[in-house]
Length: 302
Ligand SMILES: NC(=O)c1ccc[n+]([C@@H]2O[C@H](COP(=O)([O-])OP(=O)(O)OC[C@H]3O[C@@H](n4cnc5c(N)ncnc54)[C@H](O)[C@@H]3O)[C@@H](O)[C@H]2O)c1
Image (tube, rainbow, N blue to C red; front, side):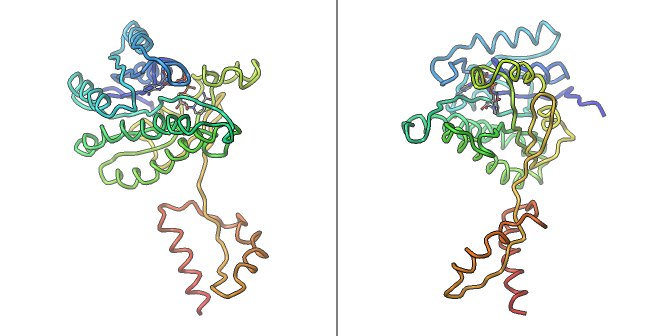
């Protein structure tokens, strides 16, 4: 099966550089018409210019593709709505949204100002919420949509100095979990991508030889699979250096202990059994937890 996007319209946020630029180039090379969005600011979110997005548009056009530039900040819902309208005016629909725009304001939690926490949440979480909200009705009417949220290993597993970023990135997994359920009946698939790549965001964080292996291009196949008609839904795909993995949020079998005066002591004593991963499941919705709990409680009643 070829991963083809002919006739599809895509919006890629933060596509003026780094991973977003590669995403936009690859989607266009495979036939999609692409809105190249980028605020054009610094890695900490300061400043802005349309030049970066415009350059990517020129690259796409030079290669024979179709693209338009957009300089909206994903934090500005009115500007994001205008961006979606720009795509609809030009090409009549929006099939794919790649929520990729992002910034960093790293500091240990002890030293972090709340303003730096808030801004990172605003760009990553609310930015993706704004863009998704702006295409949601359209995708429901079209009965077609593919949305990729860019999460991070920092959100999934933690990273020193990135409490703001990690919290915002894992929130996107939560957003995906529910939107994939709500979008299913209208063929809207929502997935997460956890990339590792050498970009300005990771400059100085890793040794030069490691960064050389982590070409942003090597993440792109995962995005293409998640943005394609054949995409799964509710998948967290990890990608870096040409290696692809999946992350799962699981639920252990657990243990029914009931409600007795010494249940806290019993739970403490048997915590290893509660957290034991043998027989764990990947729940299809949050209801699975309650079902497991009540089923075990009923079984214990006999
Ligand atoms: N590079 C990695 O290893 C890595 C790892 C995990 C997650 N990510 C995520 O991948 C995405 C791309 O990051 P990157 O590494 O290519 O970094 P990058 O800094 O090169 O790209 C981010 C882009 O987003 C744009 N942007 C920032 N704020 C914006 C806003 N408010 N509105 C519109 N555009 C805005 C920036 O101008 C920039 O071009 C980010 O969401 C990042 O958190 C990257």
